[in-house]
Length: 433
Image 1 (cartoon, rainbow, N blue to C red):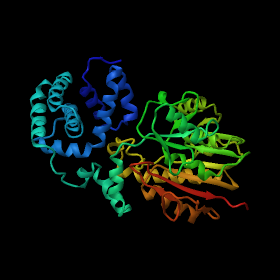
Image 2: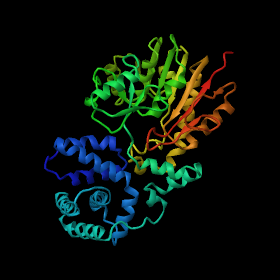
Image 3: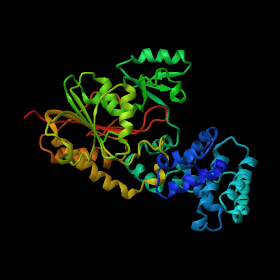
Image 4: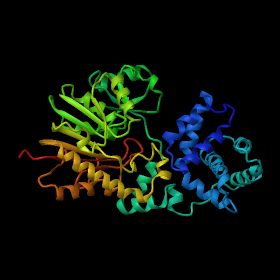
């Protein structure tokens, strides 16, 4: 536990400095939250997420207001000013409070020599208002390479994707079909005073009008529902599950899709869930326990079949590969700071390797669903096109669905501000002979 009296903005600046140094919010925010009183935690989360979401626009403005960049030991004060700028531009808080508290936080960070700079920069920012963004990276608040790539890959949709990435994602639930029908659960939510509606594409999905704490959801602790985006829920509609099948969920953590598979077909022979990360596998088990479900969990690199495979082929495989996560930026705005253009080619190589390995453990007559939460074609349909060329006899199945863009080798959902994340799916079958 840290010092409970550390000002909120000083803690936020610290978190953002960690993100700039390559640590994800999901890693550095939880310990930071623990240093604050419970009442302050939602505000810290909002500051960190909001500043990451608008980082590129705010950073451009701040850099133009500084005569010269701060030296490395003082870099945390740069982040402190970004937090304050975020509040000036995007919050309802009184400007004088933002200015005063930012100067106080600067002292708390042991940078008293910079209080004059912080005060001066923020005063002029308040007085002059937000400048016109200089370029698309600043206007859409994304790294330049990402804007250029999206514009190239999605000439008709790139602005809509960037806009969707800057919105706050809705809270979506997956009803446990073993316990309730969707209509039954909608009725329970209505009774509990939680406004909600059925999702368009996922058969067990419910979208809430506004997010709530999970303890406000009826029977949540008893496994009635899980929180899962609509796009991620669609995997079970593509797997074509039937009683007696042996199913593999490769790259399974945190387990949402493993649980969805078990909920949608109660009479599967066996479900095996693999993940490379020993720290994330317990999350899968927690989800299974809460929902009263059973799967065999293995810690292994799915691609290294020699390490874990028992020689029995699988009827169905869900391969949700590690990817750029470019389709879920609205849920993880730190991706804009963490991801590099040079990450994409190595990811594509991992994705190809996983696909080839999983194909080798799929039964003739079996089905594999390839999934990513990316909107970049080189992680998606281009991988499938190459695989179909190289893999004799692999058959692409065109699912009869109303969602996504048909890419010729799979379907691409783009992030939608009013519903699902960005996601890609391709369905492959292995011939009987």
